[in-house]
Length: 263
Length: 369
Image (cartoon, rainbow over all chains, first blue to last red; front, top):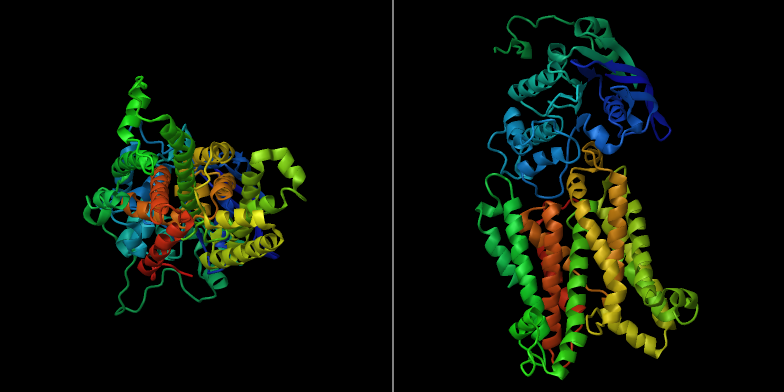
């Protein structure tokens, strides 16, 4: 279980995240949503131990500030919003970095085949020999996800759940790959792991998230199941935008929802 | 010769990369080839010169012992080979390896292919440390030289280099991101400050010290002795022996400090060890051979084209190629104006300068200042 209690983060004199309580259970996909600048990424960076914070954060009952880097690496993997690369690595070399310090949890002898399997899962079969820098932004993001998947290939290790932290995993992807990636995340949770993902698309969030944490000006505005959280009031209050949940556009305006995906 | 070897191997895959994206097998082959090239270069260097001892005869003597009346070397030649050429070759290998590996480690640390101890002022800082000992060693710094003996010079250069690297890193890095523009400009500033203080020392130096300084500043392997090897060798070997343990961490670091940490790399410790070992290797090299430039930027760059940026292979390959190239440059420096000698620093700069410009031209669109 991931438990955050009264977590606050300040950068310089400015308090970016204010007193957040946040819990994710094994088997859950928790989405963090909120307007730009509401502190989502900063909060995620506190959860992954990248930024110092006040309050307490624990993974499987262990305080994350007490974990050694390799211990943390075998409990959770982190997908950043974007990754700039300084040297000409091939896609395979990048994905293999996923098994640098942690334990993939794959069966003995399978570690070598993990990069291929991970690339196949993110729909990048045959890309292993390409140079990372030659790929499009969306493809690069999926390569990074394949690397992250290698790090925590088994969602449960030694009987304990593992965690995926994803910062906008689908923001640069087309609709097909948004669905593929969100299915990977949900599958990771269904098999006993837990996922925390920052998302912007409220429809995709409603479709995949087991719980939604809504952030607003550094505070938690609401947390709960999608049907409880997504209300006209909350959206207007948080996003400053008068929208109506579940309202259909005029009959002649086409709209396509991820929920309508077949199969 | 060395360059042809690399080009030949790089040509085996379409534009230098196998379809599987796995370059480790090729890297191992390149490393083996480079080891052979280095052995060949070293043997040639041993036999190249006024006395004509044959390389094969030497190897035979090492392997099977000499048979009386049939020695490969006359007594006079033996002195030339064992007391003059052998220390010079060993020093060349140590320093070539130190310069190239330091360049590769520093580039990994700063996540930038242009980071080089010579370019960013670290060598100047190390040089200042050395000059302080040369000029003030007999007066103000007497206690230091008395205490440390022959180690005073390399250690002073080490601390000069260390201080420069630490300042440089802290100036150029903000929140885990290293700005290349800040790094190069800070390097210029630090280099200028070190040069100013070095200038003061030169101004204060007497005639004998001045001659020492001038020779030393141009960079040369001439004057290589077993004593110098005993002073600088252990420091360089120790520093280089640490670097293979940094390789995996440096690979992860190319994704950024935060991601490296998420992958389980103890980033702070990695940076600390990398900075200390680079400073030690550069300090010891600068102390005995002066400013030999561009090996640290040319060698890793060539090798990245051939085997990719994986530091597990790049670091040992850099050591081998750096050593070979420096021995080659030294051979040129000994023969081009024979019987006089051209300082080796002039040769590496004359070849390395244009090469560096070529890198800049190739990467003009990529290098983001």
